[in-house]
Amino acid sequence: MNRAFDAIICGAGITGVSAAHFLSRAGFENVVIIDKRPPLSFTSDHSTECYRNWWPDPEMLALMNRSIDLMENLADESGNVFRMNRRGYLYVTADENKIEEIKSASLRTSELGAGQLRVHTTEASYYQPSRPDGFLGSPDGVDLLIGNELIRKHFPYLTDNAVAALHARRAGWLSAQQLGMYLLETGRRHGVKFESGEVTGVNIKGGRVQGIQLSTGVRIQSPIFINAAGPFLKEAGKLMGVELPVHTELHLKAVIKDTLDVVGRDAPLLIWSDMQDLPWENEERMALAEDEQTRWLTETFPSGAHTRPEGAGNDILMLWEYQTKSMEPSDNPVMDEQYPEIALRGLAAMLPRMKEYFGRMPRPQLDGGFYTKTAENRPLVGPIGVDGAYVIGAVSGYGIMSACGVGELLARHITGSELPEYASTFELSRYDNPDYLKKLENWGDSGQL
Image (cartoon, rainbow, N blue to C red; front, top):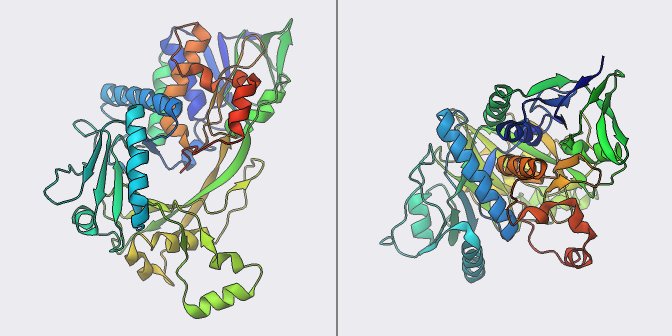
């Protein structure tokens, strides 16, 4: 016997769960999420779990501000069950020539709505260190600390070479799993259901969604189908004859035990903002340079090596996208076994005591997930050309921080509620605009860390 739902969501990652949550809050009492994997298990549980409102793109900044508002509301109502903090992001540089550029860029982002820019050059300047836990009473905006003495007063584990540190304050991290489960469980109390299954077809009649078919042959009726398939967004779009302009990249992270306490346990997310050459001994560098397969390890690496403390023990996360690889998503992607050592060496520029781990690094845990991206790194949220069909995804490396914002936005599209000004920026139809396509040719900073 055919079953019927008010809405079907394909994908139980953080965006699908968020969409269900906000639809249920908007009055939808019969929503089902369908995924062949358990909720929050494919990409969402491989996240860095961080969030920030520090974005150079005004529309993305507005979305993130709204999403963080929603997360803070959920933290308040749940007793902060997902342990949201506001330790911030600290961008560190050793290049004095960058200081004026950092000031100018920070002022522009501040004026877009990210909060006040405060510049500190002496110890007499008022700078409020971040609290290790919680977010209430913490500042927003950004603090720019200039001068090594001032920087190391507050962050003594950083290098003597640091000349400026930009501390974005409405930022931090949380438990992505706990946030996702809270969204799912509160949705369930309003009628949301989860079913294990694989969507293999979308039934369309007269240009309108009628329901879906599962791999088992079971048909489920619904006037609304939501593509929240994460890394499989493109495949799910093809079920409706819709080509979504996205690609997937494998992003890795490594976890080690910081037995030497190199990273302060109360540290913010620490990011090295300079390009660098990896620190090798002369003999190592010569040997690497002689082999075509390893020569790239002696070349200049991009900026962006970052780390943060994890949990109540001495774990730290190490992340660095030094080689972005576009590939099709799979259940068991091949991991770069060199990644932990390369990330460790890259972090030594910012955290010199990392060198004490060279040759005796604690056993790393290496994992990764697939980031789904558009060319300009903006999400896809809204209708997709078939009546009753919607998409929510392409949230790249910002899925956790944007989940509540895009979930609420999609619910507004579906219920016909008033949309925020940024809504059209994230619709698929933006690619029908010749002027927008022209802008894509010279897109600036996408905000990807």
